[in-house]
Amino acid sequence: MPGSDLEQRIRRLIDGVWNGEDPSVADDLVAEDYTLPEEDELPGDFTGPNLYRGLAESTREAFEDLSFEIEDVLVDGDRVAVRWTMRGTHAGPLFGVAPSDEGVEASGIEIDRFEDGKLVASWIQTDEKGILEQIGGLRPI
Image (cartoon, rainbow, N blue to C red; front, top):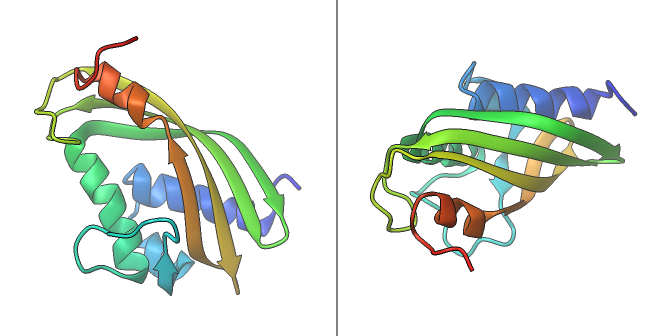
């Protein structure tokens, strides 16, 4: 349902945290036990809102002028599916590749689960191969 409460919450998180407009929104919208269920090792010793912000900050270190454009949002119960496009300039190390100063564009899809209005888990698929090709970390086939 367009304009639903959960859709508005995920839009606030992406604009606030990932697009850098107001990273403090994570304190209101991300649960203390937030996790990425499919990740064995997470950056730093972060949990909850700090983990969510830390993921965005580490991405921003690799890509100056980072921006996320939301393409689609679908809400079903306590889950939100988001299709987005990320853009930025590769200005910091990423996947062992030195900064290339190349512009990068990549798509991704995430499914987020909310409890009591707060984000508790995210499953994220990003075109990492495409990113590596754009920054010179892989040769196109």
